[in-house]
Image (tube, rainbow, N blue to C red; front, side, top):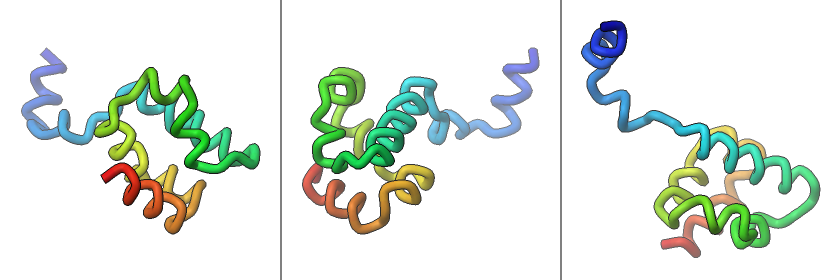
Length: 83
């Protein structure tokens, strides 16, 4: 019953719901970038490529914590290459 109540409270919450998979990939991208790797190299890693679609990767690069950690210019450049 509580699931129905939470759904009725915000019927569009599924549009912004984040999966644990997205959380893990975002953490990986941030951790690898903090380790000195370039974003281009990180998104080409088999770990990333095998777990997210291009659409999911684009959505991942729009997350505020990823943009803050990596930098606006770097993320904008990567988004341009994905389009």
